[in-house]
Picture (cartoon, helix red, strand yellow):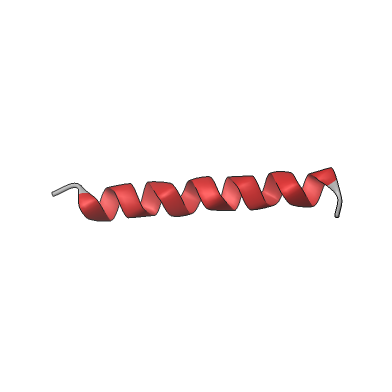
Length: 26
């Protein structure tokens, strides 16, 4: 499991969080 893949997973998780926040906000 490389660090680069881990960073990509973190970026993806952050994007998913942003999407969730956008959906929650009116």
